[in-house]
Amino acid sequence: MKIFDPERTPFGRYWPKPHEKELNNALSRQPLRLAPITGDGRELVERLLSVFHNLGQVSLVLRFVHPEAFGIFSTLIVSLFQIHRPRTVDLYLDFCNELREWKEHFGMASVAETEMALWTFHEQATISQQTRESEQARLDFEGDVWIQRRHLAQTIPPFLEGHGALRLAGILAEKHSRLAAMIAGVEFERLLRLRARKLCGSRKRGPKKVDDLIRRSRRQRRDYLA
Image (cartoon, rainbow, N blue to C red; front, side, top):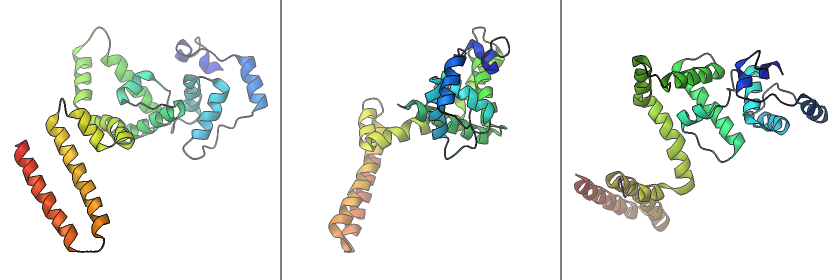
């Protein structure tokens, strides 16, 4: 309980101290082992949530017990990552998975230290009294190609899994017609090949004719986009 004491740590400023009596009663009814971690940690997170009923408090406990695997949940860093998940547990686990990606890329010591570094960056880059250093840090962050790839990895694949490439092309068509045409063209080729395999089976000439048609269509699309 000391980590929630505002006189001992800064965490008490952000998360309320759990009600000690209720917490003890919950743990007496359902004893909880914090180690070892099994699987991806989902079961441990779910069990802690059933006791604390607060993701911030749960993440704070996990950050100090397993700093190599968990960080403190922060909406500021979630915004930096551009992570969106409908379920609380999925959101936190993917948040920690993304922290792990950043840890590996930037050579940090642990997931917890990566989270702390990103929180510090956000505080420095968004202060009201902007300095040359803080402004440069923000520009470097926004211009980093690896970071932009990570942002796309958090948005495009989940959308494609739920809606598909043609739906994405339809959404992009109004503002980015060329990009939409390229996405739709590639998806059309993929579907055409699948259909040809089903119709032609083991026959050799059918697929060749399809490939010729696709190459011709691709040339026409390049001419259109040029």
